[in-house]
Image 1: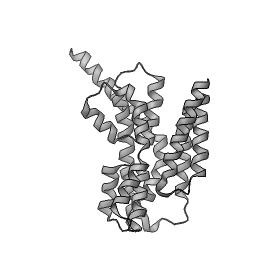
Image 2: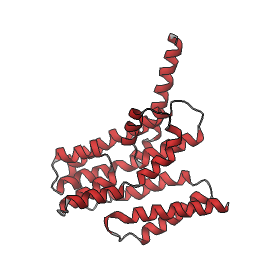
Image 3: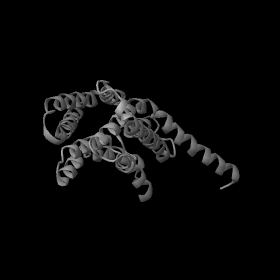
Image 4: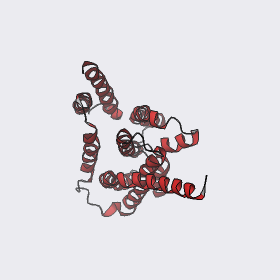
Length: 236
């Protein structure tokens, strides 16, 4: 590879990385308050500041972190914690199955890195880009940029929540950012009758099954949404 070709290759990789980083910023804005809430909630639940920050750094799963902090506060048995977190994160298997055709050529090391960075926000940003620009190279670097962007700002927001939790008014409705963020992620993906029907069905079931324990409503809603989408796809 000549020097000019190598330089162009590096520039292309850098451009794809920062393109993914920039693309996820609007979703970071919505998720940022959630990190602050988590940091404050974790410390109030009795988790040490170092432990709360480590969860964000190494677990990196917002909904599971919220659930774990609440369970620690309620002294729930460890086995129940593990099972509940596993159920909450089952949706990531659906994300992986959807995005894998675009990344199946990657090495196991690359796949491990991107699997760790796979969040709701990173998935939406990456899959939307891949569907629009299937021919573009360096897909992994775009995903990496989006995932790193979310990880960095999640650490910052967690730190702020841990540090400033005592001065955040409990009546401040920061948790309202969660549904707004998910709405912003879902709407661009509703491109046909099947996807729209799946989203509507999942939304209705999520509300109807909200009282189920351990956030099982998420899993049930995901299953019903997928089923509705498949049925509508066959009819179209």
